[in-house]
Image (cartoon, rainbow, N blue to C red; front, side, top):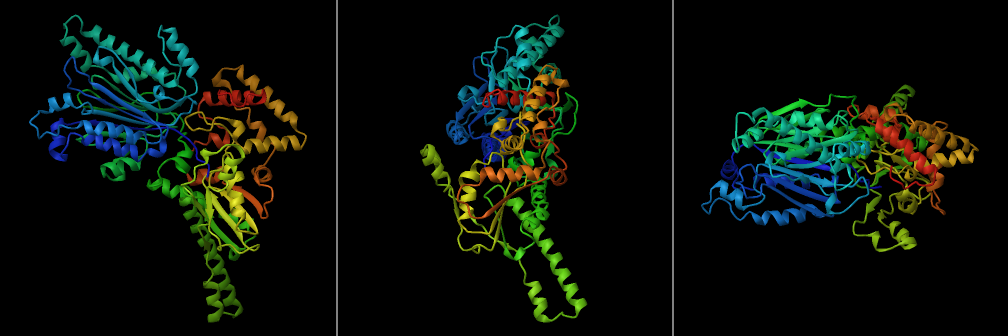
Length: 629
């Protein structure tokens, strides 16, 4: 219902055979580029503000470029990039050119490919912020192409660290800061190898020896030890070393596939399965804290760089962001829906005969399937109980049995999104009026004044669409009561690891809690939380706790939900409204492998999260709610 921007998507391909091998087997030198296009297109949902592609050539002669980039802005960036790149493949091997000549003449024929899909988490936009980033040097082994799916919570400290070493970053952003820190560590590694061989070799043999002996483990350990955040960082040197590093808590996802032809990395498992037509068991998750590295010679190594921390894999990945075609995610989303059945039964007073079940298109559809399956099980239990009672009472006639067995769920598609409507063409009240018509409704499936209408969504974060569109739209069907259900818990806290949920004042759960405190004469709680946040900010980040939890402590989830209803129900609504959220316990039982829940619980996985949430509340209290911490 409310589209969330979120962490970016990454894709990497490393060819392990000579280029001519792929032309002969697959008919084109563009084999890897075609695969990269598919990897990116199937992760399009992960970034629609921009995209970028990079390639490293391992066999370019001096005087010829060996690292190429193509970047573009906007939702159609992938199409624009590949429309520019693919026509460059005029040499397909039938014109008598050898592979080395083809690689020299076609810019995007190479051995290492990198793709990135961008969503901004900093509010900064423009082509200069689109990945991949490139650090140039005349020595191939010091060139660094980098992209990532990440957000750092201690970028100020890291920035100060690299400035103290004499570096002068040209842009203040976590991407540039990381690029420079990795570049500094790469320079040190080059110097290490140089010192090792300088007394026995002269140039150009010395330069080649440096390229052949770069140890990316040293580079990553030298750069990443102080990083606080969620990240998957991808990189390639101009001389042919490639790496992918994941944060120690597994906050951001990374999966890989390796065979004798390719090494592939992407943000989602089913994307690799589909593009390379391989079974699920062949695609592996990169362990938190580890790096997948491929040397210039093509040797693959997976090494523990940071140490594995506590499992804080992001649960929002499973609820919302990742493709539902993953077998585990599909099962988990169904279970999220199924676990809501008891609360909904209570909300409709157990009257299933007058309850219509539906969903808000399109991302809630799998949770809706689970919800329906749960209701079918519940209804079957009711039928079995009725038949047993009938048998005990001696009333098991064909007519009575048929009446019991004929009871069915009422499942309808009541909301249809009008994808042609574009509300950006209007401003102010006109825009709000258009927003109210983003969805069409299916008339005739709800009985006026008698039916309960239950609709499920995967998340209710800000409540804007509920207030401006959904509730009014559903009320036109004239149900007795509208029950709006979220398959995820209440979002109460900002995310600082890549999801666009950084302003606390936007969350309807936060605004409802503040209103409850004011209504009940508990404004002192707001001030106490503010003072506690200021106290926390005086402590080192690793000693801080989340003081903002005090805002929610006086209330139950149900009390906050009831206040949301008051705040979000448009004037003139006839139906009763109830909002039901998934419990945090229900979330963990449905999604046991990804317990990261800080946006719901406030239990941040790194010290930087606690520091930033305290700072966010200080900004809110002091009248700077839009100030980015």
